[in-house]
Amino acid sequence: MYLLFRPKWHRFLTQIINTQKHKNLLCSLFSSTTTPPRLEELCKVVSSTIGGLDDLESSLNGFKLSLSSTLVTQIINSCEYEAPTRRLLRFFLWSVKNLSSALEDKDFNYAVRIFAKKKDHKAMEILISELRNGGRVMESQTFSVVAEMLVKLGKQDEALGIFKNLENFKCPQDNFSVTAIVNALCAKGHARKAEGVVYHHKDKIAGVEPCIYRSLLYGWSVQENVKEARRVIKEMKSAGVQLDLYCYNTFLRCLCGKNVKRNPSGLVPEALNVMMEMRSYRIAPTSISYNIVLSCLGRTRRVKESCRILELMKKSGCAPDWITYYLVARVLYLTGRFGKGNMIVDEMIELGLTPDHKFYYDLIGVLCGVERVNFALELFERMKRSSLGRYGPVYDVLIPKLCRGGDFEKGRELWDEAVATGVGLSCSSDVLDSSITEVFKPTRKVEEGNLKGCTMFKNPVNINQKTTKGKKDRKRMKKKKKFSSK
Image 1 (cartoon, rainbow, N blue to C red):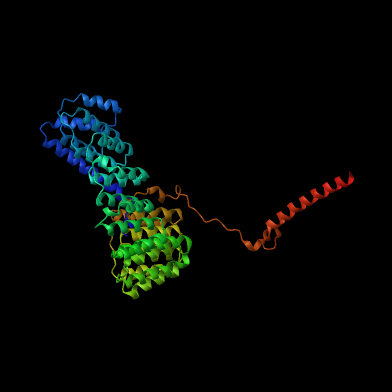
Image 2 (image 1 turned 120 degrees about the horizontal axis):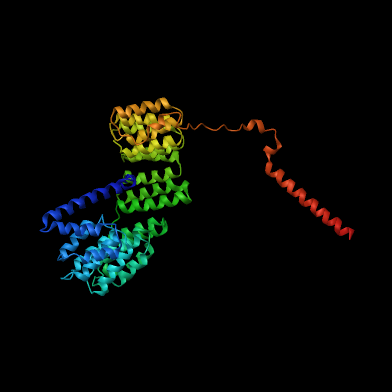
């Protein structure tokens, strides 16, 4: 569940950290070599965005530096996040042609994994072709990375093609490679293709059956194919593979996801039946199991069922976590049950649960979206009492919302409060100026009572239909008169 609530900027921040890490690695590489100026110049040439690929190769030909297999790998590793992908590829191909001692197989495999991680299909295709034509060995780890990336790029048939011809790459078709291609296919919902691989390589999955079955179950779950997912569970029981919490949670997610679209009223009964089956196998549903159901109930705005599931959790001895309270409070706020939603939040705080910032960020955003800024301010006070910190995004939402609603006084109060506590704000101070900020007033609705006596208001469609019908009748009568006159 943590992945579900991971902040959107997490990947961007991780990339920045990794970039800085590799910069430090590059500096340490230069400081540890005997000729750092020449190496530094070479890395700058590879990482530069000025000039074309032919210019890059011309510059590389001007270097009189003796390269080694290890040095080429180090340069690629150092320039991985800074250099454009095509320049990295050209540098590697130039090294293949000009290196005095040939590059080893492990260097080719490392380069293929780098380009796979960068999602450059063309570069992968070129280097894989070099591997095959050069009679080099593709490592099993490399095939696993390549298969995963090709399926992510929507080229699952190409991944299957490489798997079927692994002997051309001197890579064994063992349980590791079979598991790798099955996992890659199922991760994107290609369970049918994955089952085909399993069917033709039954003799090679000995010892990894549990992993194979879990992948197939996940693959059918991605498609929300309950029938096939249930069949996989039955096969697992027949094969003596022990079912665990992951298997049932995966099936529960599949079942609930399908019911959201086709049978919302059957969501809770069928989910509870699955949980009863879990208990019969001595697998106790956890908060994650219940949160799967609550998440789907929130998508369909099933308020009573959400509250019922929360009470059922408490009675069954499964302690709700902050995500549980978040899901219930969210559906209550979205459906206008603000008092009940506040009670749920207070109950969570009284139990001593410490939610993530996502809890308050999202719920305050929901309250502002349904035009209940007063309740959003109350929730913000609860957040401040919990001393979570990171209040900047909340101020950035509330201050403009208050000012655009005409409450400049409260907006100024929050602004001064943020400045006094040293919170950095992203919104401009111009929102506090009533001469600049446009106040959005609710449009006046037309009173229906004034139009009740009007015939046009009662049934305008019928009047139009009658008018059209009258015109057609008159035309028909004219045609009859002309015909009779003849």
